[in-house]
Every structure is written in structure tokens, then in C-alpha cells.
Length: 425
Image (cartoon, rainbow, N blue to C red; front, side):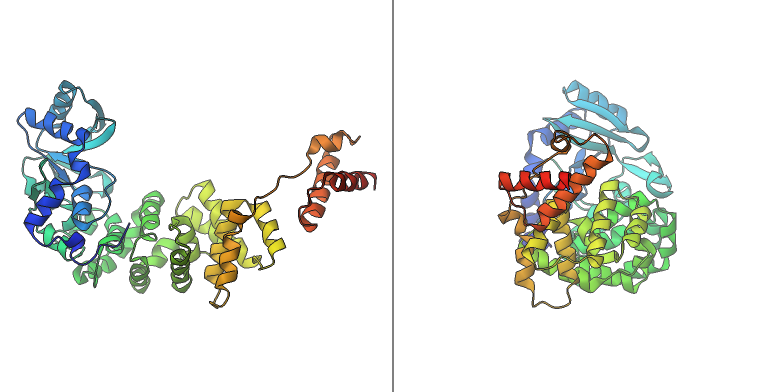
């Protein structure tokens, strides 16, 4: 996601906003228009809401399209079926129906107001008041709507915040946070993704005052927000604010190593590679395999993510050298992805910038050297008279160690001779 410029996309006026929305590819998609058409045929109003509208105005790509309507869920399902569209009642208790049109899924949600807020599963009732629906959302930039023709509807002044790249809570920041403490992390994540200039002072003060509420959140919800945050354009500035406010320690169990994190971002820029949230998280918060396990448990990471974190930490104890032969052994044993992960961790941990060309050469080794396959298998050992069992693995391991030390020779006669000598020896 690119960092929005001041005056996102050059949009400064309401007329320019409407023009940008009217020309948006996602809005003019056949599926999206079909959903609007199905609802409006029944006499109801429908508007796109939230991220699709916000991102279009800020010049950021759009992934999902949510639609709000004054039609009740039963009406939405009836009208969608009548139009020949797919219907999945994915969240009826909260007024959400997933409608599938032209191969794309659209979440259609009835206008709501909160009756009782208790985290992500608030008790709601339906309403026909668009401003009331907007007021229950978290930030003003998420309370923007547009019609099927691209006409912006802005009941809470969110467009002005979009123009200023400002992330601001709707109403009382403290009230919004107490409705769902995940909004503390969302505040930082949205600032890192969309903010420009200084962070909103009233919002920042509120999240610091309510930070103890983070302990009530599930690890899975925290994981989602943190992986998005560390990959956002202003992650460095945002992590500094979180560190200063003792938020980072509450979430990760450590203040993290921001200097190493900054070096990783510089390396990513030099190599022109996309950021990887797991690598960024590991570089920020991990210094040993034990810390990797603790962090993985804290955030309920997957087994694969845990393994990657441990791999990153191990390079601090067993560094990758600039010896080409040793690098090839690392690449052979680790595989392409784990090897490159270690290169990035080791490079970011390097306090001197003098070795940049060497690190770049190490990182690019998988592009210029194809890892050979082990010349022999257990069957080759057994065919030479060794009975199946542990000794087969022992002979293979000894041969592999010799083969790696010898620089991966491929001459068949040499390899057979060495294997036979090992078995006879």
C-alpha cells in the first residue's frame, strides 16, 4: 500500500471526489452495479461504504466492497434472489448478507445502531438513519458512503479528514475505544497506513489512557492488526509512538528494536522487494529462538509463521558468512525462502553499512545458483548390501556432509567411489 500524499490523489473538492468515485473500476464493475440494481428495484437505497470509498479518495487500491442499505436483511435476500444473484446469510444477527454477483462477493449490511457494545459482537438494532449508522463506526474516514453513480455522502465530515490524511475517532475517542479495545491498535494501524503529519492528539491521549483494555483482546485479533501495521507506509513513526506510550510492550512483550526495523525497510527499498509482515515482525521483536516461541504463542501464529520466526532468530546465533561455499551450504540446507529470510535478518542486524554489496550478493544467490539434489538415496545404500535400518541414514548423512564440504561435486564416478569407500570403511 502506497503512502497517501498530502491532498490524496490530488482530490481537493467535492466535485473532484465525485468524479473519482464515478470513474472507479470497482464501482462500475458489473457485479457491483447488479447488487445496487437489485436493491434499488425494491425501492430501497444502497450505498458503498468504508474502505472502498476511502481508498478511492486516497489513491489506494481497493480490495473489498461493502454496501450499506436501508433494506432489512430479509428484503436484501429476497431482492437478490429475484435478480438471480447468489445469497449467503453470513451475519444475519448483525444485518449482513453476502451477495455474489458476476463472480464477486459483496457484503450488504442493513443500517445499524449499537444497542450494547461489547467488542466485535455488539448488540445492534436496525435503523433507516444513515447518520446514525455512520456514528457507530470507528473513524471519520471510514464513515464515507457513495451511491452507485459515485455521489459522495459524508454525514460526519470524513472527507475533510481524507483530504488532510488525518485519522480521527468519531465522537468521543474514549467512548469509541471502550466499545471495542481493538480500536486502539486500529488507530495506530490506520495512522500508519493513511496518516500524514502528526497523530491526532485527542485520539493518542485516549488510547494511552485506555491501553490496559488491550488485555481483553484475543491473540488472533491482535495478530491481524499487528501484521498489517508493521507493513504499513508509516510503520516506523507509528511504532515509535506505540513504544513511547508503552503500547508495544503490552502487545508484543517487548519494546522491539526499531533501529534494526528501520534498516530492514532500507534494505527492502534497495532490493526493490515487497515487505513481508512476518520478517518485519521478527526483525522488530525477536532476538532468540525462545523469544520467537513466546511471540508466536502470544499472537497465536501458525506453525509455519512460528518456524519462520525461529529461523530468523537462529541466524543471530549462527551468522551467515560472506564465504560463497558456506552460503551455498546454508541455501541447500534451508531452502530458498528460509535462506533469504536469514539474509534479511542478518543484514538488518549488521551495524555497519560497509558490507552492503556482499549482503546483496548473498541475498541474490538463489537467483544465480541452482541448488543440486542429493546424488543418492537410501535405496542406493541398501543396493550396496546395507540392511535397512539406522545405518542407512548414518551412511547418507556422512556422504552428504562430505559432498557439501567438497563443494557439491557432480562427477558420477567420483561420487560412486566415495560412497563405496564410506560403506566399506
